[in-house]
Every structure is written in structure tokens, then in C-alpha cells.
Image (cartoon, rainbow, N blue to C red; front, side):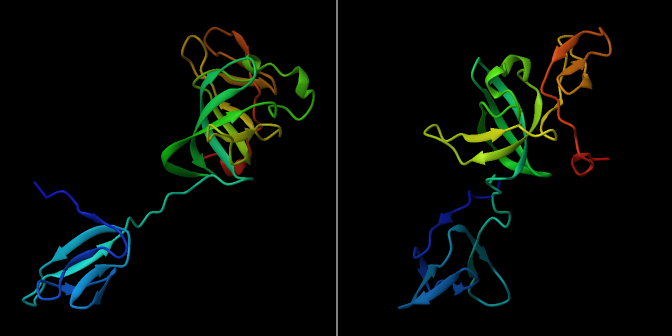
Length: 194
């Protein structure tokens, strides 16, 4: 079993220059090797007598949703005023970890005061939404589905079957033929994956 990784921060003294040679992500000062990056410490024994000490960071940086980005999210819960979601993708790029979001009054572009959240979303629906604000006190992203291209793209009926959109506000179960209200997205070709 490999030893656990040692993480270090910039300016942290790693070892003496008598014990190792400085590699990438490090610098030498007053006979000691220091970290110049926040990352994971690596020791490699190469051809020289002394091991090479370097600091490497995770090569994939975390992508964050920004204002105006189209995100794919999963509805977690709903109430009479808003839907809480977990953001899974920014554009077509999957996120390493999920972010929380809230869809409030910006569900439809028209008749915003007449929108009923339970007629637009249900828990476990997959929704395309646009980030309109970076959040509030609960650190949620505020999202909107007030464009024709935004809304529910995948929904399951109570029978557990994936539903088919039949209008901009309804989806139907192909097995039971039951209709359920949703704010249906008119999906654009760039969001379809083959």
C-alpha cells in the first residue's frame, strides 16, 4: 500500500538541500527546499544520489458555474415558491462535485405571477437552466428557466418510465398515457449527445 500523500502550501519548508534536489514546484533558500505551490509532495529517486523533491497540483482545475452559463441540474426538492437543484454540468462539461442551485420566479418568461412550481418540476427531473446570479446567503446559485430552450429535458412518470414531451407545458408517460405538467425545454441540437 502506498504511503498517504503529503500536501503542502506555498512557502512550506520541505527538507534540506543535503537530503534532496529541488524539482518543479519548489525553490531553494538558505540551504533548504521550499514549496512554491499548494499541492502534493513527490519524491523521485532518479540516477543521481539524491532524490528529487517536487510539488504537483491537480492538473484539472474545478470548473465553476458563472453568470450566463447554461447548466444541467437535477431537481432535489420543490415547494410552493422554488425548486432546489444540484448542478451537475456546466455546458457539456461534468463537474467534479455538485453545486446547489435554486429556481425561483424565473420559471417562465411570461405570467411569472401565475407560475406554480409543482406544475413545472418534480424531484429527480433533469433540467436545463441558466445561471442568473452567483447566490444568496445560503450560497445557492440562482437559476432561470425563462427561455424556451430551458426547462425539463428528462422526467420519469410515477410508473418509472421516461416521459415524452407533448407540449411546452406537458409530458406523457408512454406506458400509462398519463399526462403530467412540466415546464418543457425545447432542446437545441448543441445539447443533444449522440
